[in-house]
Amino acid sequence: MADLLRVLMVENAAEDAQLVAGVLRQDGFDPRIHRVETEAQMREALERDGWDVILLDYALPALSGVQALKVCQEYGCGAPVIVVSGSAGEEIAVEMMRAGADDYLLKGKLAGLPAAVRRAVSLAQVRRERKVAQEEMQRPADHLQQANEELHQFMHSVSHDLQEPLRMISVYAELIRRKLERVDADLDEYLGFVIHGAQRMAALLADLRAYVDATNLSAPPGEEADAEMALQGVLLNCCSAIDESGAAIVHDPLPRLPVREAHLTQIFQNLISNAIKYRSAAAPIIRISAQRQGAWWRFACSDNGLGIAPEYRERVFDFFKRFHDPRIPGTGMGLAICRRIVQRYGGQIWVESAPGGGSTFCFTLPAGPSRPPQSAAECTHPAVAGRAVAAGDPSREAGS
Image 1 (cartoon, helix red, strand yellow):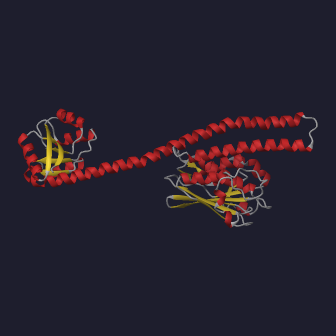
Image 2 (image 1 turned 90 degrees about the vertical axis):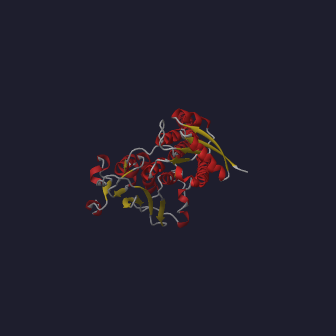
Image 3 (image 1 turned 180 degrees about the vertical axis):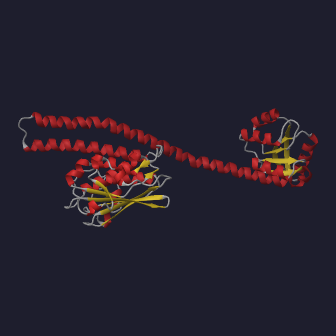
């Protein structure tokens, strides 16, 4: 049984169409040829679709082969295009193939047409199957993106809606404590639990929202961030904790990075806050370094604090994991947020530590085509000039 072949032929000579039909029949095809000569006729035929192959002459009185090929591409026609011409030379054949034709034959060598048709039809089928497979693969990604956006919106809404009632609970519990002239020890303790619980829940909601923000892959990366300025902003935010603990922050000159400044600020904020909270008896000394390694910057934030036991080094990046005194404030979300931000940019984060020997948190972020890092002295804000110094500063080494 002959193979049905629906052919759209762009050809002005009816006898050439008959010749092509005869060659195809001899090779086991049942060709149904529809011949057109003008662009208007071709467009009308392409509207019907359903063609298995398109054969076109390079030079027609009313339509050139290049223009016919552009019309096929404009309609997104999935049928393969074979140029069959009696006048085109090798240069024109190359031009047509580069423009998107699947094959090229001279009319004087039509014996090779059936093999060319089978080959082109087979390749077209492969392209269609690949396109369908890609669309199937893209569909779960689209659903995941939509789910991620919905989660992001939900968490923002929940965090916003719950913050106010939690604030009210905390405020009115404190007002009750003050209103009562005589509060026995038990009632004072109970009210303290209410106030502390509301404040902890508010902090937890804020951290969950920060984590969802870092997870939101649809968010634009934003402009390039200056790590030096991000660190100075964090030091301003942590002024009270730095003064209270007597902490010293020593840092290398820091680079500019193709990341969001808010993300870089969150990383520094969490690492420095943890280094201060989980300090040993000695005043905290925190060192921040940055080293270019190919396409990445490797940051390290080291301290002289309590350290982390080997079995907890991986688990410290999980949700709500806290392995020290529960009286130390915190939600256990800080390092999970850091890990999610770093992973968002394709980097890695890990900790090197030993109990009582301090900790070094290392993370990598992509490097961009940016200016060399400024020295710390060029960027230090006056309000923190006494707290953050460049690594190797002689005054720091002298103990000042």
